[in-house]
Amino acid sequence: MTKIPVCIFAKPPVAGRVKTRLARSIGESRAAELASAMLRDVWSSVAESPGVLPVLAAAECGDFGIDVPEERVWLQEPGNLGWRIECILRRGLETAPAAIALGADAPLITSLHLRDAINGLQSGDATIGPCHDGGFYLLGLRRCPPRLLTEITWSSEHTRSETEARLASHGMTVAQLGFLTDVDTVADLAQLSGELRKLPAGAAPRTRKWLDETGWSAS
Image (cartoon, rainbow, N blue to C red; front, top):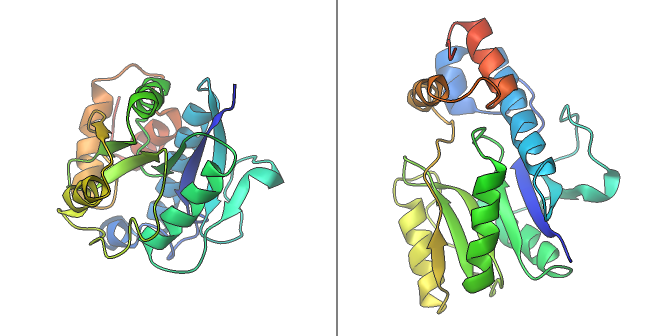
């Protein structure tokens, strides 16, 4: 059975170049350390999930702190976020019946979320994983018409609703997953810490370790 590519969108975790909104509150070095921890947790969850092929959708070349085979590092095309997501998903759809784009800053993602995403794609055209801030942490597609994600308002409370409306305008049925927190601001970080307190110790271990070591205790 063909594995579904799960394409994790990430930048090299370099201070001053990742999580810039969060860095204003916690500092550039800590923000980069957190970005690295979250990416490693997300990558591990995907790598341990059956039926999927982990892919690093890299914004640029660099050291990501994870061991990824060269053929599974897919560089993003230049352009806005919508275009970059489209290009990566189309590449995945060249060899698989569906493809999934996943953010590197939602460390509570599990194999159950991915299973539900794939199940949704077996019966519908798209799956979307909503975030509490109005965005989404996951988008899975069975087809990707041209300009599907162009002119979406990114990093907005309306990002998910605009995306869902765009999918519907192309006659695509959309299955929604459970909500997760992606971390862009210090408020997101506080929410993530609170959520981790309610989960078993094995959840997002690298992110949990960073939270504990920096005083954002999640134990």
